[in-house]
Length: 484
Image 1: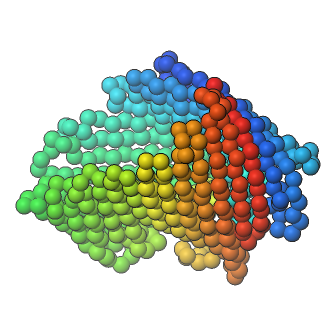
Image 2: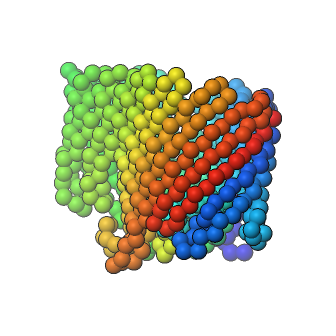
Image 3: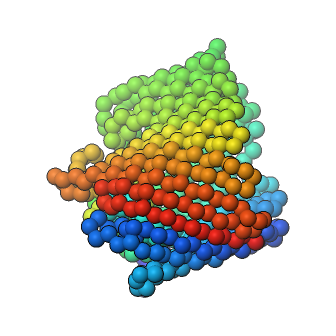
């Protein structure tokens, strides 16, 4: 076994050991265990979601699982596991076994300053969103993906002169087909003034991420350093100096893309929780620019933040709006981040190990009445491969634009019976070749009626109509489930 393989096994072993310690300590608290089981019968007029050879059929799904909850004074554990066996009544060769698992555990130690946290998941996702972005265990064409991670973090008491936070994180992810298996190491350090400091303010925020391919043994990293120092408010005005630096590696390991800027700025406080900020940045390897930010928090129910700067790919924006009232909650956000080894959005032909620049706008609204809940979700996501030979935004296999919306209604007919309905509309555009593009659309309508027969027995009947550029399907489903 090579040195590289030993290193990866050692990392995975450390994650497993730390996870075991956290879980063992949390389990010393009170534990509630609830076994579950269900039987499901599904009819589909296009059981394989085929565009040309549509075959109807029945699939029976039997499942068993357990839900565990443990909450103590210094930690908690949430665990859920289900195993599903599908029986295709037309073709027994299509019978398959599926697993789903979710684990979260945390533990606070050393006067609650140090926190240990672990997560583990087993899920079934699309083999390729280019072929079908909405598969499930009934239709198949999914892969099982498994991940485990552990994190240790430290936070001092911010009421003093210094506010210090630090964390170290490790994870391991593997997929059923071996595509995109990797290990990750991340660290984050935040050092800023505490609440007792009245004359100056400062901030140093450093983050580092390293992804290591389990297949090619190649490693990819990116980092960010954001710093500022200034004078506390004088008549609502705070002068400051700001600096930013970033870097990432491309597929060519000898090439590191770096950029940065620094410059003076001024922050004007409208009141204690709201301010506007303007600064002029001298760029290290790009044109100079004006940087500005707005943060408004007029009351506990409303928050707005907007930030503009420039990074290695050009103009960069960040936006968050949250508004909460008695019955309605609205959230709008926009982010720009680097992601690598993201199997959930995999496209056949792309190099999944390369970093992608992800630009995502999302909106969520919910309205709650005494018996009915309405929700609406809207998203637009652009994913750009960061090639070491092309400019950001040029056509690369894996570049995609994903748009989606979903309207859902849940109505409680009584304390034991509920009716739900939803409509989902998605449009996905892929650059499958440098000179070609593929556009898929999905229209999915679901309606479901659920009833609780007793404290532990439930039944559910649901209908689905799907109309997409890839397939068309009508589906009916009946489920009986038990939770002890």
